[in-house]
Amino acid sequence: MLRIDRATYDAIVAHAREDHPDEACGVVAGPEGSDRPERFIPMLNAARSPTFYEFDSGDLLKLYREMAANDEVPVVIYHSHTATEAYPSRTDIGLAQEPEAHYVLASTRSPERELRSFRIVDGVVTEEEVQVVETYMFAHTGADDVPDCP
Image (tube, rainbow, N blue to C red; front, side, top):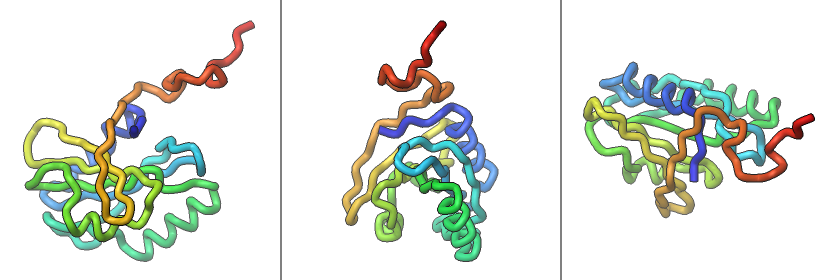
């Protein structure tokens, strides 16, 4: 399951709408080992295409160096589809290189929000639930997540 805060969810959808009719793309980084998407990083679609996205190789290298320096990983890798449903294409599946990442797709084919998340490992696509929380504080069930009260 992808647990994502409302502000980040809204930012992904807004980026997809802003870049329409071209596909939008980006990353949401989070602390290594946390599976928590925290830092929204919209990227430029170097392909500038309504049917394909491509991260600029220089920007991507800079981003991965920055994440490494901050002990972050790409928790979410997202892009939009402009005329089709939010489901990975064969190209998307072939390009998926981060087995721990949530691959999020937002469709801008209609005014309604359509955002779905998938795990893509060795070419196998598995859809997962998206849980939108207002904030990460208390969004978990572990007792260790609740601060002690005096």
